[in-house]
Length: 158
Image (cartoon, rainbow, N blue to C red; front, side):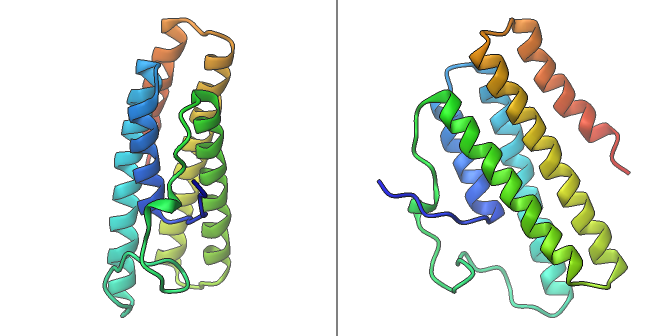
């Protein structure tokens, strides 16, 4: 199956849910579920901002206006490869948000976009850590630390 890249929050969320269903490590499976849920929240946040700015309602289309398709989702089942694809998705999302940040002068939009960039960075870091732990056969305590770090990252938000 050929996978096309779509950097939307919808694609990220569904991809993480798919990877979650194929993940053998229960801690990483939990982490992917938590991040998937947060990505859906990002999609809602963005759609509300677009509507407030006078933009169109949310449509599940890519940047060229073509309907969203399942080919946007990575279908791999190798745990290390899945996490690498997810890390790359987080990096692309942060770059896309950075471009949007540079194209607006609205301070509220800048604050929202900076929030999203920060969260994508947290996701990327935790996914990279999960990848290393899987490669190194980390202990249950080390994997449990991933979930703790994720939860703590939510508590420091302003």
